[in-house]
Image (tube, rainbow, N blue to C red; front, side):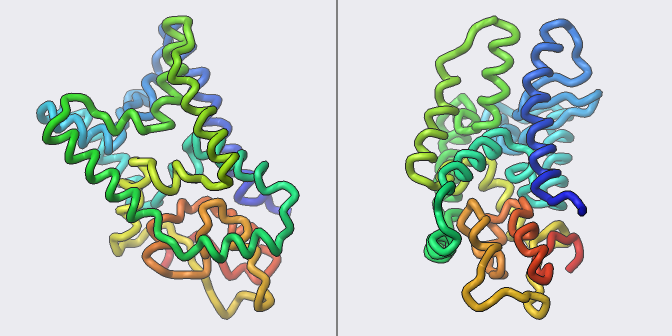
Length: 276
């Protein structure tokens, strides 16, 4: 049987999460083929820069050519593949998903489906977009420091590991990660990824642009689900309705493929595809 998308996704997330544990340890021993963090990464001579961090550096003047090139490469990646960083690469996203899965233990499929249907109608992008816009305006006009980077959970993940590797101490900000996860576990909602993450907003903007690229597609005629059977909706940790082709769904979907896996035994009506 062919491995599920979830298998490959967990493998990708796990390798990246563990990789950023190893990288600062190697850097501390002068092995620098790969160095940096999720905000700025040097990968075998190629420089990648978080686009949000790039925008914030404009407050202090035009950045270097390497920074511009690195930001453009990341933006092109997002333009082609959408929010795959959120669904396939982000270490906080991995931890948040696992907490969400534990929260769902013991719930019946009927209750999960009911909860998902009620939550699927909202558009968290609006709140995230407004918060990020205000933050960017404050950074560009008033503040000398890139404050939105302080809201980057993958950024904090790598910076805490770098502090441990180079300074041999664990900073207090390391408590942010478990504190947020505990709060998400209590509320049962992935509120950080859905409402507050500024990187997520910036990546979501590319989903609003008509373009060829990786997208979730629903082929109604191939769906064999019963009227009230919605396995695709039950597995979506972001409370989206994968059957909708709405702007809200496109803005907030991170192309994780969980709904595609759930649909495999029911006609394969959902699929991730680069084709229109």
